[in-house]
Length: 390
Image 1 (cartoon, rainbow, N blue to C red):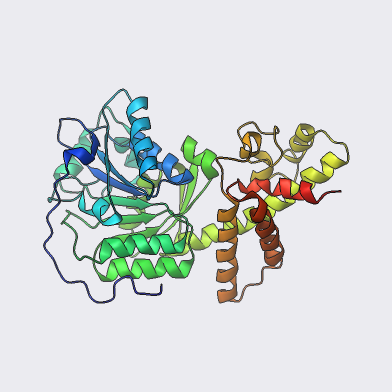
Image 2: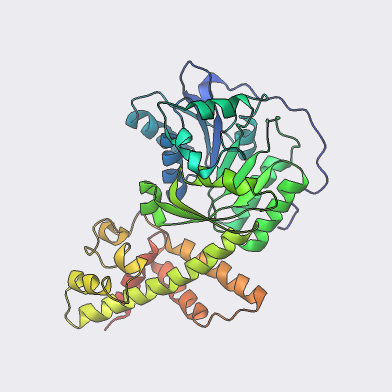
């Protein structure tokens, strides 16, 4: 980044948790809060992930949210309140630092069940909202509840800005164990490692890169696949991360050390970028030859051409009713985000001396599509091809 996340060693400060003004508290229950979770970034993916998180954590827990759009935060609060039979704690923060400061104000309080002693097999004690079992109670009494802050942001610069805001003012309120920062953004490996180094060198907590795959449909359904990078020096961190990710998805792959998650995600999204164009081209070709779109898609999805863009996110309107193409290409993975991921993959490949023969051609297609269809789902490349067809 142009300026270091932390320009000098952070001065050790004694910070107390701020009182939360009643005017900024969205809604709450009278009983003491159990654990506090933070979520920063309520974009199309983050919004749905945060909703699943709030649904699956214990009702007595508190979720602190932050987004640059205050209307989105209030919409989130209203939806949670309207869709739950219980009064669930959701609080709004004015900035990223406040998300971190709002939890962990006292040792043993406002912490999260998920340290070394919590394994993937024990995730049920977090999932079960109505009856937290004895083993989970015992873990809490032992002080193994700790704070987690999740970020889901569009660009590397946004992630850097958030962590600069968190780190620049010194030490955060104490917690019983290390804070866990889980970044679900798709950013370049170099930026991810830079942020991790800043977090670790200031002893603010542990940073894990955990981007996801599955699109807005998967985020909404809670079926995302996460790929994460975390140190294996003790083996504890991996087991701590998995149950948390499984609150928002169905799979969590540990790909290696810190940075491995974003590296794996860029490799995956490079394939996605190419497959999306190929699917749009093939559908356009078949339809122009007189084939029925749904019949063509069914054949492809039963044959070797089957892929996520053909089966789940088909670019032809009406072929898959739940796909963005069937609702005006809205509510999906933006073409600008795909262009960004492709740019990051190309940069990472250049840094490692890896050839990507189709990359520049694909980048040209997405650039041309973005010029006319900015803000639409990336499957709108099909419409770009229609525009060029004679």
